[in-house]
Length: 327
Image (cartoon, rainbow, N blue to C red; front, side):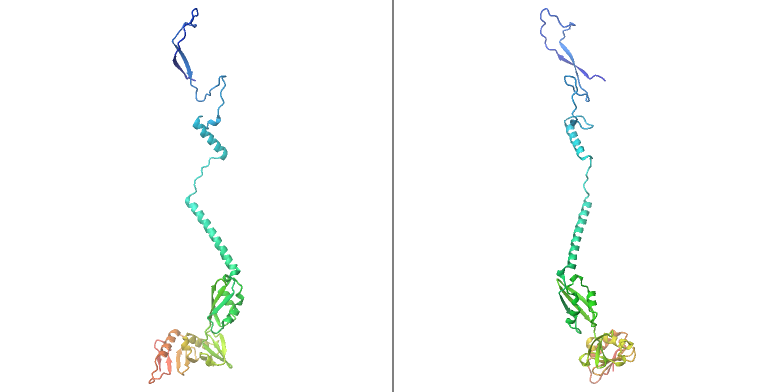
């Protein structure tokens, strides 16, 4: 290894005159300058103490791969301490904003859904919403009390659990009811709308007169036919299972209520020859059951025409509804 010794020149200190009788240093040189050398230690060579022993190295002042020094020592100590505590050097990247938003939305929806489910469950099974009062409207043939009695099985049942199917099943024994709808009145009220069957004619059975609808369902009985504004179906079509009865009932069901109330009897020689009698004795020639709505409008218009004493009318013919006439 090349020596790093550097010659330096220093002015010699002035030496005192040698005393008499004392000779100069061996060699006889009395130079005015002293040549000395200074050696710079290499970076890896450690200084030694006076006894020639190397000083111990301070490992805390030197980081791996870096020379020892003030800044290197502090950084090395920090890195060594961090590595000793964590074990691995892991860089934590921030979570993407979109992923964080999706997680927040998902948790929010989950919490709201769970809350709504609890509310619905409480409402369905809560005794606070139990049915206590039942109100009925739309009854003519029946009394509200009869309907309320039939629906008494709903009392105490939670209102959200009551369905229209439940109501219609309970009202099946009441033949006058065609259908029913409901309207909840929280916290404990129930309003039931009754759609009753409409009687269209009377059938004579013995001494009684039975009210029937278009389907032939018996809706009630009366001893006095004049007390009910319904036409009496001829005995020849008295059976509700015959084609004649169905044809006559379909015609009567098409008529407006005020026009039907003016009818006295209804008969048919065949399904294509239905005739009606008014309470004043006039005849309505209807024909078959086709174009019933148009025929009903034509008959209503003819009946509203002012009577002319000079031209009395005994027959209203609507068998051809686009060309009705009277005679």
